[in-house]
Image 1 (cartoon, rainbow, N blue to C red):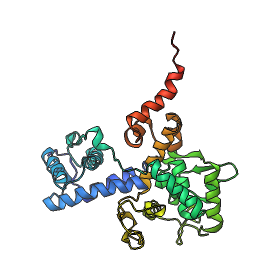
Image 2: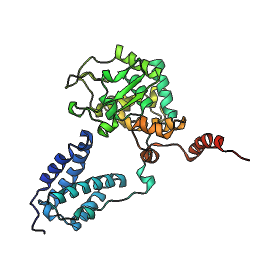
Image 3: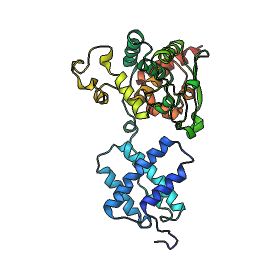
Length: 340
């Protein structure tokens, strides 16, 4: 052990690291770091490691093997260990662990197809849902929320952060703003701020919701959220619950799983997510991005509109088949080619 190392408990090291990152990342990202590092903290309790000075390459290997044995996905393991490596690198700086230890943190590299989640709300499912809400329950929260989420492909943090003042019905757009000191942060902080145009159909859905179904409440900071619960601004988990509820396919047709909707437990509050076909907010975002691309929206415009890089879109969000991508290229490329 180096004589320069300062005794530091795992708990103390984690707290110092989170305090260091707090000024750099959003609250949501900080919570993710906290969640992942607490797994390491629990492991140190199990093996009796109470001083980070004693952390070695062999111990790192034991921790990574411990995580593998829990049967988690490779992508989850990769995320956990990458975040853990950043913490170890910080602990090097504050002389809690030996120099160079971060380079010894094992990080699995899944194959490309293993990194991509296939769960999505595709166009074939989204359009019947939208038609149902437009004709059967126009102006409800479910209707307005799905219209806006599908049109903008926004993250749940962006949809949660919207205030009434961020909706411009006359101009036809919403403005996603980063307000970290008031309880709503965007994924990439101020870099995620953007103005996104919305079609008249979405404007009318939001107007109907605001005039009839929206709870006229403020959040804890005195702001007027666009989407509200009776208590104020909804938690992200509450919004995900709305999403599971509104995307059940039995809303507009027969149950694809053979259940009777009148007796199905998945139609009960608290069980919406158990429905095999219901979707959270992220699959809506993924399906919407594929829909944008499939309708010929140029990649650079999708990047700006949806706040995602080309690399991330191509890896995680573009769910079009190779044939569909080829057909899109054909319509763009072939007319430009001149043959003698």
